[in-house]
Amino acid sequence: MKIILILLALFLNCVSAASADDVLDSMEKAKKFYQEGNYSKAVSELQFSVGLIQEKQVERYKVILPDPPPGWTGDKTEISRAGGLGIPAGITVSRAYHGNDGQDVTVEAVIDSPMVSGLAMIFGNPVLMGNKRLVVVNGEKALEEWDQADATGSLQIIIQNRMLLTVSGTHLKSKDILYEFSKRIDFNKIRKMLQE
Image 1 (spheres, one colour):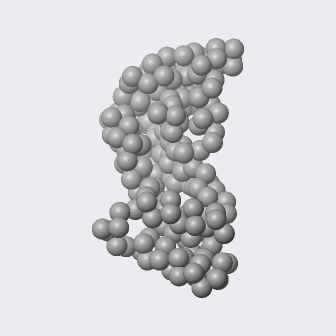
Image 2 (cartoon, rainbow, N blue to C red):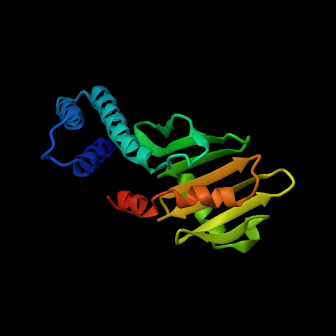
């Protein structure tokens, strides 16, 4: 039962009391169920609250994916969430882009996933990099992978140890395309969002 109280306190702190909305209503219901001793309903309502909060997060993170450059089209943004037992385990936001010359690029952001901290260790250990090369993209450490023969590659960028931003492509004329897409991403906006 301590876990329920901790979760409730955490999420109440995450949302401003001044902005009464569906999230706060749901948390109030969870609190009422808990006080009545109906723990199953309290847990279920807290899980619903988590889902509502994640929806708000997803809407915020959708804006970090860049518009397509001239001569390219962009698909609809895809969103997925991972987690279980009401505990969020990351949000993934991705968008595919297509050039009129057959080039394809995908930009994907994974936020607050345990995978991000695991990958961060690779950045500090050259032995684990394999055929990847350490580079700097918009002031952030990144891993570049490029296969000239297959015309495929990727840039993996970790931002504030909370987000893994991957720009990957196939049928590319040059790895410069990966850098072109990364330059279209507002890294300052991302850093600010991750601090909020």
